[in-house]
Image 1 (cartoon, rainbow, N blue to C red):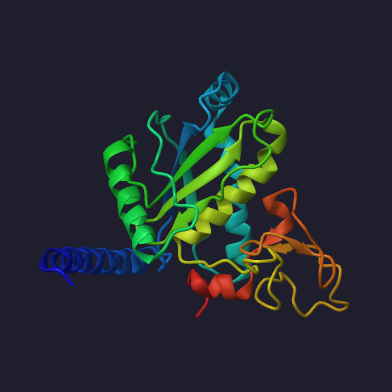
Image 2 (tube, rainbow, N blue to C red):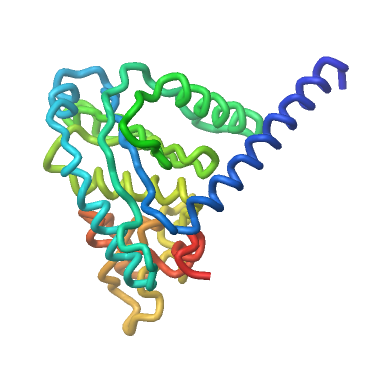
Length: 257
């Protein structure tokens, strides 16, 4: 390996080591749940359309209240002492788009994107009157022009989420579901569906894995994202209220040991 390339790899390893240590310390702080976590949501006009602009201008913090309520209700199910796990703040609109995640990312390209995303966040995040523990960047698109959106992403390193959403009040339930899912990723929760099939993985991807009869399930496990109707069929829930935080997810975010 050429000397210059060795040096680049060495520098990258040092950067990753520093990022990993910082991420570990931050996650330990967030996951002790001794205080309410501040979540800042920053809207972005994803498609540059007038429809998305109008939708963003109409947004209020109250639009995200169901997520706060959901976290509180789910935390109570696990006996968490913190009665208000999160508090959501709506930040100012951001004009500059974040770096796009590579469609087929290899190891180094994924690392590069993660670092680029963290750098973009530091350079482009507007200030708000509280220090956010989690930052969610909500990119809105006109559903009349976009029937399918890119996959949303949540990073536990840096507590950064990028949610691709529809600029439509009628799809608010779906938007909140996606936002909640990515928010949990930033806290260390992992996906619980098959990457090839998108089907919930039994038992970790089932809200009530030991329900009898097993099918149909009534709720989706939030990190699986679908309600199992049979061994091979599952439906996307209409809202976050039709989901539950399962045992494994609760353990990943340290609501339970």
